[in-house]
Image 1 (tube, rainbow, N blue to C red):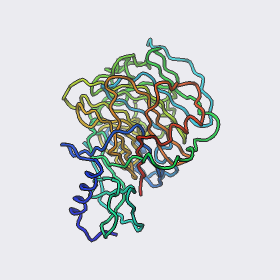
Image 2: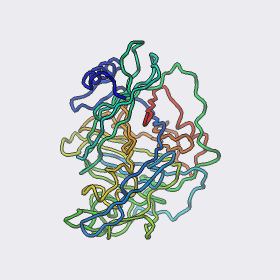
Image 3: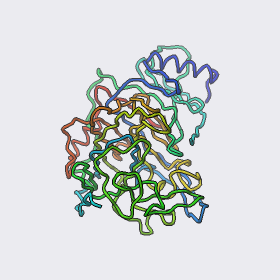
Image 4: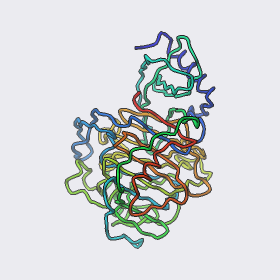
Length: 431
């Protein structure tokens, strides 16, 4: 049901209230509020369909409808991790609920697409002062703390849907949500299951070792993978400096990933006809699976001062693993991305030299947060990313420096990763 106010009037009202809440748009019309140390996405899971790539023949692809559902759908299946420089990745670990650490042979170190929709939902309940209000208007989403006590002003709520990384382009308008108030009653512990979360993969840059994962990049045709003029470069094994392809898996060296260079992490399990459609000749691996997943990262995002295409714009994000196995950049019919199969931006710098890292979910139900993380320019930070199927939520949290990436993580500690903090933002999806 649409409000009697015009869209323009509502946008003006939204902008005014957001400004009163301390949020503002920059020169690129990206909204920013204030820095937080954790962001929670609630009501994460959804059900629906997207167009899955079913075959790739030469330069053409076919798609078919794929249904999905569940508390973390569509990212409840296999996912890949992507890192764009300038970025230093010191540690990376993957855990799943109710599992033990997987023992493997350690690998030594030798070897601008945009879309959106316009819709408004008018809430029936009355908003109180201090409540969180979200509006999506002509594809623009802003969320603010309600400071208005009465009258007939609308209080719409909806979600954002936006573009991704065609050609590595990552510019969009993200939403804003209000951080949790410090004066609220302590919340009950988050349910993160019982027992242990077992480590399935681990990388340690200083030791030069990787266990349970594979480093890839987009240099298909350079010693591994394929290249053609219809689809461009496929995935390839990444060289240890990430600047070229190589013939077999290598371990990323303990150096900064350069500006506008992307490294992809997947499991060490090769696809063997069990990954769905993959591009012929590509390097194809399974992603990180598990309904509930925990990722621990240690990284920094140094400033380089560069101003070229995607330079000094580091990012760390998650994709449905089917996307890079078919075609991450290029013809939209050769990827499920545009139809909503899932992308989760964890830490993303939207323009060169910016020191504010945003987070956004892209999919059929999407949303983003205008509260941001401080970019770790001068030192390393540790980060937890929790996909919790028990609560249909995803959490990003900056951790204390003493957190260890051990063989197992107790469920009580994972619960703490999901707890509210003094500088916490909560974004409710699809409301």
